[in-house]
Length: 456
Image 1 (cartoon, rainbow, N blue to C red):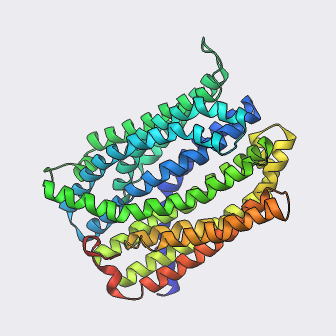
Image 2 (cartoon, rainbow, N blue to C red):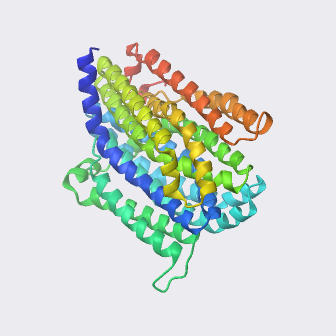
Image 3 (cartoon, rainbow, N blue to C red):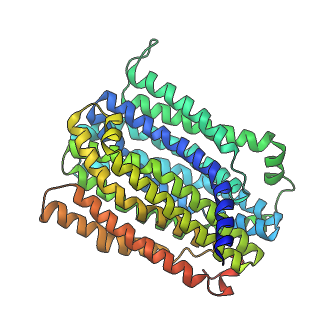
């Protein structure tokens, strides 16, 4: 691997990731707008949106990760030119997605009662009882959209996502302002209006993408054709679950670390929780660049694996890590230099803005580790290595990061930012473990085995 090879691969990775960056950044703007609109309602509404997001992602991310089992199946099939296999994978994933989406929606809707038992502020929980059943329903079209978008991403077809996210932002922005604040004969609905906007947005995304796959000749050719044999579909279902279940566990463990932090911050009061939500919302916005780079790198690793191209596989993974590091450093610098201005965009309450700026100062460092681990999990997924990596999350969050944060925030001091320093430590350890894991796994041709035959 020469510097010229790496430069060339970085260019190819940037081209592949750019549409995903735009689409995912645009998608995350939806949640930024939700938080900003909630900030104009009340600090309690901001805290409710933040806590709801933590509870929602904890449940939804497990289903999301499970369906990512389609990613290496399709990308490896594309690399190998196996059209029969990728079509069977899409049919299997769509069926599985429906089966998983319904209980996922129910679990999200019941989350407020669990949060009440965990000692969260009563005024926040009262809003969540109205808000979370609605976003639970939104999880159904969101998960089905995820299946189709994963299939197209594995084919390198991502530009249409930009059109979809623009439409979704228009729908969400208009409905957020209108329904939350009221007008044109509609009373001010607050967080209920924000939830209704989220549901409408999820439906818009799903229906638009499904229409594109039906009427676009290029996309229709990828997703249609002769119906796959049921034996192939069953085999694809097994492969998706076998690969995706550990990914779902990995994502759930990661989300559990962030969700636990949100709950622990909530014990510090409504003001701390509102500041936490603003800072985490910004961090999530910049994080989409790393996830897009990771997705693109994972697909390129998967294509190389399907071609049985070990040097290409190593090069794609290395470029992914370099791109992730660049994005993390850039995001961290923005969080540090612009923290006061960022907080002011979300709220006009000086106390809430001050707390948020304090959290953003910590985010300046944690985003480097966060970006690197996002790429690490994606490139390992490209070689179907999904069973051991979740253990890194167990160790990083629950054996080191969360205990260190609790020690700093509740035993040695009273500053909720100590919880974020614990997460920073966890992310640093996890990212180092993932880089080491990829280097070890990509040394031999064992990582080139087809997904269906891989022992993981």
